Structures are given as structure tokens and as C-alpha cells.
Image 1: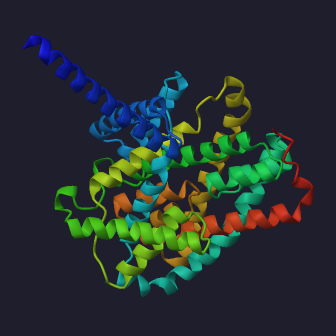
Image 2: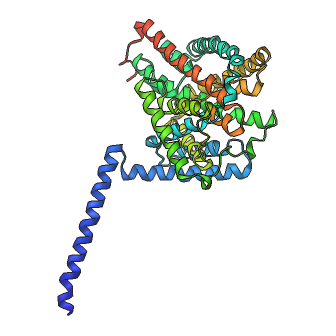
Image 3: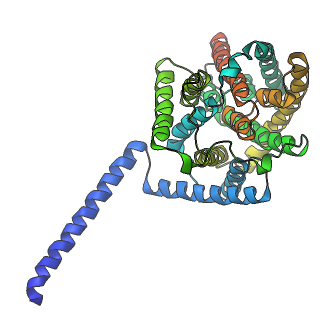
Length: 388
């Protein structure tokens, strides 16, 4: 009996081995399509583990915007000590799309009646952004010693990824542009929440995302959220909208909620996951930064970010007096931090997220389109081999 069982056991073992090999091969094929490898997935897992610890600690300490700043700080520390982190780029699109749906849910039928009152603030944003870009270009060129294309794309407060790509085509130093733009976002994302909590008295540290918990989410609501995110992204991509992954779902969600056709909201847990992802993504921009880059590039980026904050604060006071908008709303609308991060902060503390989103949509669209026009005008900037 024992001898006759050996072939069966050998056959079963061979079958299991073949099944494991097939699963492993299929997994590698799926990962290959996304550009991922098992080591990369492991580094992404470490990044989320670090982000979770940071978010929990900052939440316990009552730090404002804890689930964004905690992961961001811990990711920065991990990159500084050369821990093997990996930016979860494949999750960036779905997280931005879900964030767009969440921000769009803040659009209400009542907002349509306030559009007239927002025209003045939106109109003032145009010269404000132009002046900030011009002043930043002069500062980075004449004081920091950047060449003109690098100074311009570093100063333009638009989408970080868009500026980095366009700067490379214009012959600018894309690495410098990325670091300065990332420093700008980092400075504003850090300082604005602390300012609002400790200077303005807003209890941001104890505020959770103003959405229902995932336990209250029905299957129909989940399908609706995913459908809005997917359809909004597809429509925005087809018609060529800027930042389509967030803007498309935001506009579609805003229309549906503004017209009263749906009341579905993205759950708290999803917004927390989106914040963690944003924190890891921002921290990841500083992977590999050398001491020389810190002295020659990041220090100027931090100085420029501080200058932008002062200008935004002054603009918030002036614009609020001219338009009767709340100064905090204007500050969040005019602070040239990341579009995602400023919208998220407004959403979490419940301060006119729809109004803030409209201003940042206009700012990013104006900067990206304006940068393309400036690039085409300065044909001598097309020196794409200069900084390679």
C-alpha cells in the first residue's frame, strides 16, 4: 500500500507545483502590464506601512490634516535615510478620480445662485497668477541664478507634472523644476493647515473627512461612485481637458450633485487612503536628493514657497474685502499649493470646497495654457538636449 501511494503523492505534488508555476506566471504577466515587479510591490507595501504609522501618530497628536501630513513627513524621513520606498504611481489615477468625485459632491443647487458673487474673485485670480509667475521667474533667474526657461517653469504655479514635462521640452532643467515645484507644494501644504488651526482657531486636527463611513455605503452607491469616476475621466480624456483624472470626475460629479440628481458621497476611508497616497507621492519626489541639490535648489524652492505664502495671505485679505468672500476661503483658493491638496483641505474642514475647486481649476488651466503660449513664443528655448 505504501509503495502504491508514492506515485499518487508524487502526482499530486507535481500537480500542485504546476499550479503554483501557472499562478506565478500569470501574476508576472499582470504585473508586467502595469510596469510593476514583485520587488516594486514590496517597496510600495513598505511605503504604505510607513504612511499608516505616520497617519496614525499625527492623528493621535491632533496634527492638522494628519492623514496627509503624517504620511508625507514619514515618507520624507524614509527617503532621507534611503529606505526602499516606491511611489504608487499606478494608484495615482484612481485616487485622483475618487477625490474628484468627493470634491464634486460639495457642489449644491445653492451654489448656482452664488456664481455671480464669485466672478470678481475668479477675475482677480488671473492677474494675481500672472504677477506671481513673473515675479517668481525674476527671483529665480536673477537671485537664484537659474537659466530663464528653468526659472519660468519653476515659478509657474501650475500642475507639477505638467510643468516638469513641458520644461524638458523647452530645454530647461527638469530635475530643478520638479524639485522647486515640489518644494512649493510641500511648503504650502504644511504651513496652511497649521496656520488655519493655530492662528485662525479652526479645529482641523480633530476634523475627520465630512463623509459617511464605508459601512454605510450601499452596493448601488459604490457602483455610482465608480461610474462617475470612470465616466468623468473618459469624457475629460476624450475632449482633452487638463488633469483629466481629477477634473473630469469633479465636473461630472459637480453637475450631478449641483442639479440634485444624486447625493452619493465618497466614504471617509477612501478619502483617508487618497490622502495617504498623496503624501507618499509628494514625498517620493525627493527620493535621491543630494546635499548639493538641497543647497543649490531646494533652499531656493523653499524660499520661493515662503514668498508665495506671503503673497497669497495678502491677496486673501484684499480679495475678501473686495468680494465679501470669507478670507479663509480666499486663502485656500489663492494659495498655489497642489490642486489636490488644497481642495482636499477645503473638503475636510467643510469650507466651500466647490468654490476652492473652481479657483484651482482656473489657476491650473491658465498656467498650463499660458506656459504653452510662452514656450511657443520663445522659440530659442527649444534646447531639449541642454540638461540631459
